[in-house]
Image 1: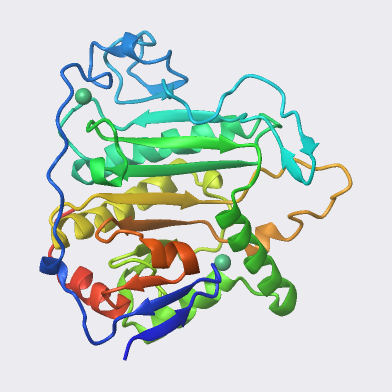
Image 2: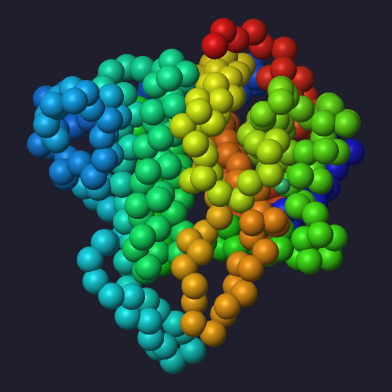
Length: 344
Ligand SMILES: [Zn+2]
Ligand SMILES: [Zn+2]
């Protein structure tokens, strides 16, 4: 009998096929995408992207020339536009606003053929440093409410260029999925004076069967109500609401945990397409008339990374109900991910 599981954070219902547990070999991975003739993210093609907004370069290296180790540029085809006013207005019963925001590309490494999982821990630390610096900078813009860092790995997960990169989108409203998480965390805190994420960490560490790996800094686990097969979340054990507060040495520790996560996914599922998102607190710019909008966030929210390998398709049933059909129970996924041998 499949199980219906309710996700306490996202308020989502998931159907998990407990008995018909699909294993890694049961999933087919689409072929790799074609390579572009001229890759705009390789050395020597810096003029093929908009001018960089951040880069890690040796002393004396000029902007928009080769020599960088991580490079961030505005997206050439942005989903949202940086210039303009928000122009909030009502149109009959509807509300509209301009599509203002920032859309940036983080080119993770100059090497065309190395994916994020293949980079060294130090190189991954530099990518995380780029995320942190761009979040801090974009938060200065009072129009932006939320800064989302995410990654699409391979074409089937939405990457249009195969050279490894992540993306950052700043939005003028806090995204619905994030609002749900934030509100749930806030309600839990107001009722219990505890962080719901810390509560879950404590329980999962005690139960153990969904924990892939835990050390003194991070817990890698497959959520109880995983919507997707091999969905994996990385939680820092130390309660903190904001990723952007991490110090350089803490980014190095996170880089190690992230590499561990990416390698386990890569080796268990034969380098599947995947998406990951970094969920951190929203912009805390004071808002007129709402002095306590995120007043308890420091205590109630807990930043984390969510990863979904793209092994199944979302179809009409998921779309129509918000129920997800997950053919691999998270307990089975955790076991597979736990047992794979990796070398950091
Ligand atoms: Zn390239
Ligand atoms: Zn917490």
